[in-house]
Length: 465
Image 1: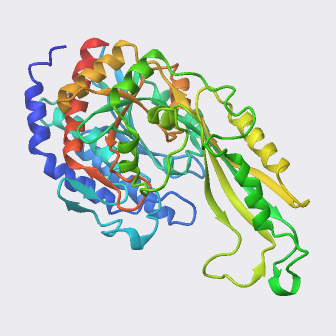
Image 2: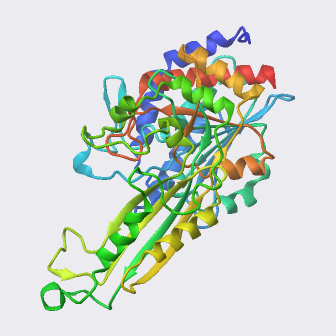
Image 3: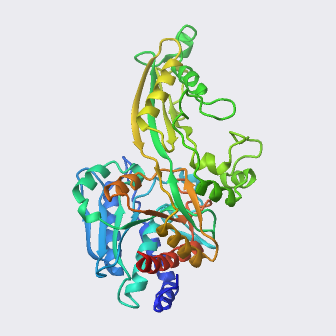
């Protein structure tokens, strides 16, 4: 598809204003907008206010904070002056993960620092860079030719990193405001630095809290040790059988509903060349640690097979350790689900398995901490092909279709509410970003190309839809 004649002006503005857009990203990154419980909610609100100010500055209209009770604020804006043209709903989120271990950060997490081609800081990539992609692309149009080729709405969420707990209430409250023909979400990962990707599947998540208790209080391990069962060892015996020696989840029936790859996925995944050696390098895996599930391709394991992890485990702590038998032990089990697995069924399968393996008559309490749906789309249509061409043009390398092992709770409910409209998941992150970990960063060259890709995408969709 041939770009519009005026597009060169828009792209030139994006190029010349890039440094100032990086400064805007730094300003957002300095706000510790951690949405998790126990952190100051006023910082998340301050972040929302800063995003709203940025939307107004870049030319969005009808900018406001959208509120639902108990939730961190969403930010909304729009530009709806292209009659007869399609409407895009742009999505990103302004909340971030906690910083993690301060001693592992090479730079302060909320003081962005540029080193070479990368900008370091919590939220520099996930997902404040996504906000900058949207705002910079729109501003490049409005500040050069004074208009957009189509209609645009933007929604910046404030609680994505805590599972979008109030999303159902939000959708009931603001459903009409969200109506659109295509959703563009900038909260995923490119395949590698310089190689753009469109995500066509997301794993879901089922989280279980497991607590094992044997007595009312901890006791002296010397005075009572011997006849008393240790709840920590009981929990260990329950957890160990969850996985077989090859790394496959050993819970009966857990794979029954898993569907095979589509032909498009098989072709796309095979073209990536994601070898074991490359994955080990990206994961920073120690040399002598073995990879699991030999015989399954790395992309299939990461994106279209379920996985299980013990996210946290606690009995006492390093700080308060003493010679005791603990009264209880707790852990969180996280299961990444895939199409067509049921969250309710998965919870029951894991719960039943753990209880069956509980020794010594210990008391076991298992509760559902959270769940989020998987998502899958078919990219074999005009919207995805248009987006693929736009990103290929911007990056100068072929755009690929990939999956994501993580979960974005927003996607499935929104696409359903909007009648199954296409959802384009376009990345700013890359395998070296370290999202959710220490030393998070965004590659500035890819950020620039992502902005250019959004500009090409707006133009192409306006012509094709």
